[in-house]
Length: 432
Image (cartoon, rainbow, N blue to C red; front, side, top):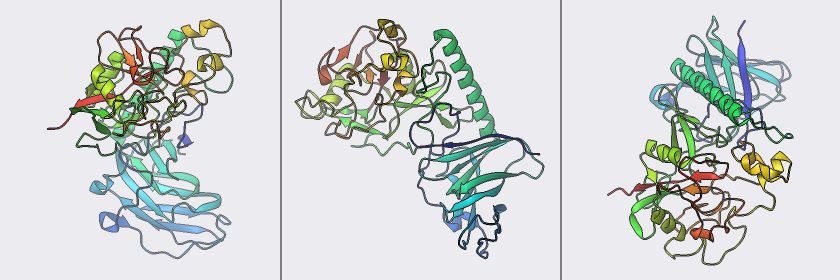
């Protein structure tokens, strides 16, 4: 008998409390990417349609097993096997890919996909709709063909290489140990059903988070800083990816301090940005991306834009244009108290998982400079490179107590400080 270790559907939005760490389908590929051409893959032979009586479609070494009454009309299926160079747009670590047509076909009862895979333990990730996937982890089996049960025909399924599976296991073990240590250190409380601080929630998993081409000749995900043509700045607040032992990337939780894990900064729209990070850790994550933290003057120039405005969108404040205020403090809301002792618990990973708190990058479309830099005021405080530990811009609770808009500056914390409100973005020297 085969042993099914995990089967989980992940939504495109914030993952529900209790979701386990799983590999994203999009470190290097778009959820809506088309299947590769037949010239780059081995396509299945044409076969008769399958109808209400059920049947088996075989192709490229895989199978679609349709039980009776799963379909109300005849459907002609195809399976395409993808290997080698044709996997360039698939998730990193994929050894064999299978693309299915007609993707999205709904079944009245579950059908079974039988997918060949390398010997030993393994993992299969099947993409359903954009930003959604099913993840299966399995033990070794004699015939090396793993059954995946679905009620909707996926667009494609990625079978990971044994090396990548081992790297995933190692990173999950590290993350689990990290979560356990931090919970033991802070003794976090769990309140209500909003969030469990023991859950390593990864809302960026399953999203297409490729960094878009840079603007003005800058590296991907970056734009030129107005008035400083030799400097590029991240267009969106940074999110983190963890570097696996096989060199691939794994989405990290924006709700947990990264500790001493090996992480890299990324800049892309729709990613939930990394909070709970110190200046020291942010600088290291920028360096891993061949970037650096912005100097104070670079950050202010990026915020003010070519117009030199007080706010990224203009000279006059328009409350709500950015994620710049909240009537109730999220720590008090989650911990269900008005006691000021909550301000000694600002490392709690559930604070930013309260509704209407931290937003994905670019969610407030009008909170942008003319140069295309988003959320530089509000959402998260942003560390700069000042060795005294400055962070700027305010965050989703406050953008005025320590200055207005682009003048907002906090100097009260040293470089190793972090809490739920601290984030960052990177700068880089512009290519010559």
